[in-house]
Amino acid sequence: MRVTGGEFTGRHLQIPKGPGIRPTLDHVRQALFNLAGPRVAGAKVLDLFSGTGALGIEALSRGAAHATFVDRSFFCIQAIQANLQQLGLSERSSDRVTLMRAEMLTALRKLRKEEELFDLVLLDPPYGQHLARKSLNALCQYVIVPQAGWVIAEHSKRDPLPDAVEEKDIKFILQRRVQYGDTALSIFERQ
Image 1 (cartoon, rainbow, N blue to C red):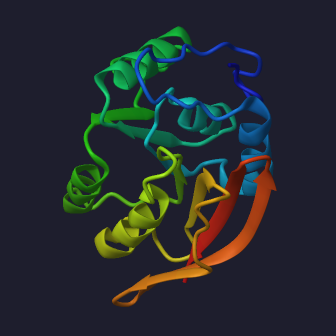
Image 2 (cartoon, one colour):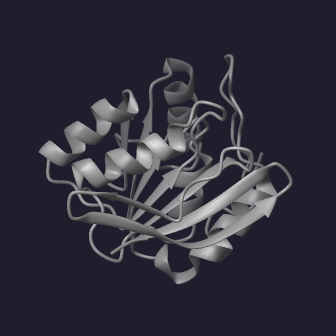
């Protein structure tokens, strides 16, 4: 697996050891960032269900100001640390990255308490557990995406997401959905 664009183009990334790891394929990751376009440059990015960290690293490579990586797996956090270190972006040496080992809800609760806001949230949860939908609902609840902020969810085409997710006064509206084999990318904007 390699970085597909920006400053670190072509650099290889480690894949964590452990069950259930499903890294985003290079061509899907490249398509995701082509869809995000200029929204990435200067953005504060949340890579939720980080796995390898490839999405957040790709965002940093393409000019994101900061990326927060969240995953519950010790093996994934280790791999993300190694990948960041080889790019000169370890937490110790760069103010552009934050790593959190936590479950999704715990992380969102903490980020809300710390009054963090993210211009772009990248979701790549395990398939088959409806976690993309649960994450969108939680993002409505914890309000860490400002108006006009984007959430891009990678999910199985067999687990479609609704055209809108709303809770209280927070609403995410589907802007675009594209499919690559069994994988779908759904782009939501906060209204």
